[in-house]
Length: 474
Image (cartoon, rainbow, N blue to C red; front, side, top):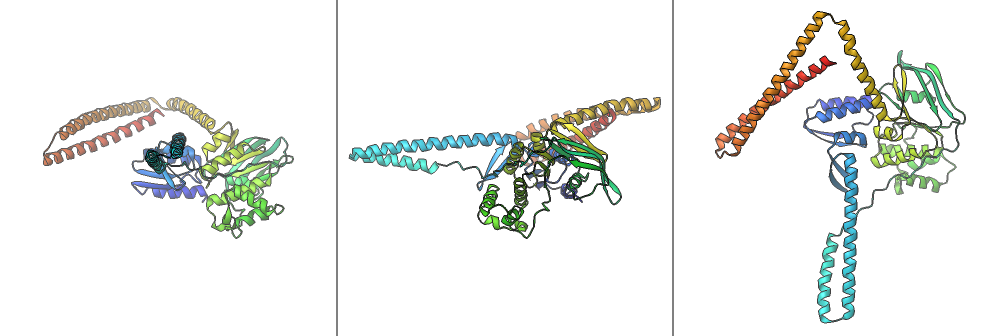
């Protein structure tokens, strides 16, 4: 199975467990966009609670209503999704900085009074000094210096040489395994300076296409051509290019032996490998640390055409933002596989969707692609009833109309019953609030609970009928 298929299998097992609390640690890693969007809809309807760790900012905006940030060994709680959290955090930091500055200013003012009183050197002046010192002690007890933001990766991609205008041309490329076609008739054109994204469902062959372009696989049919002076750099999401038995220092230094040890150490420090961290073996590194080593090697390559396969997987949000800014400032050409909609919206000038039949191109970012998809879907839905109605004979149309009327009646009855039950529940709840007899209160509570169960059943019936009616309308 691909990484995405394995993730979906894990999620399926978890979501079928009927748990009241879900702990989701990077659930969107390796998932394709359609799977992430399905997970968003599932969590929106989920009746239990969940805590999710994620660097997928678009996903967090969709599924969260509180944000807990762990930073500098402290947890702070913010009401709202990720975008709201950013705003609240900025306000909170500004407020704490103002309080700190104001308190420091007041301490210095009181210290000035103390110094003045000492110069006068009278008995009553020492009483004032003692009083003012207590004021300073009280202020210092509450003084809290705002923490510095955690250190972030500092880097920039720079192409050593410029390429020609035509960077990549893919014509009718097809690939399959064990007699089964993975994709066929893939046609892609990429020009100098473009930032192109490749999206598609898990298992459709996105990584395999990149392996064709990097010479690791041979296409079954078709051909591709790199333009003049094109130098490729490849980021493998599985980081197979790293040697497990090497240290972080040796991994980078062996790739670029002409660099001095000081230069390699400086480069590693910019990617947050400091002190003894540079002597950690690749096998000991976390997914995020391994990704940083791979990105550092890629940055030092000076390649003018970068092929990046899921570059934000395993990176924390701070590192994702640093990578985005580095790629925005890159003077070469980008071809990126990603399910990170935030990244796609920020960087993409064009994208391709890979399917078994080929690669369909769209100008613009992910939001524009969604608009086009929804417009195409709306058009097909609008056309579908006309064609189906023409195919139905008189008797079938009558049967459909009868079923539609029955569903309308069922919906109306359910709505009426829901309103009646709501009125009964409110009346009995008001009666319960005035009761002092414990036994009667228990009986009334049970009656209210029974009404609520009946109301919930009526709601489910209403939803089922509505869904069936929508099916008719489709």
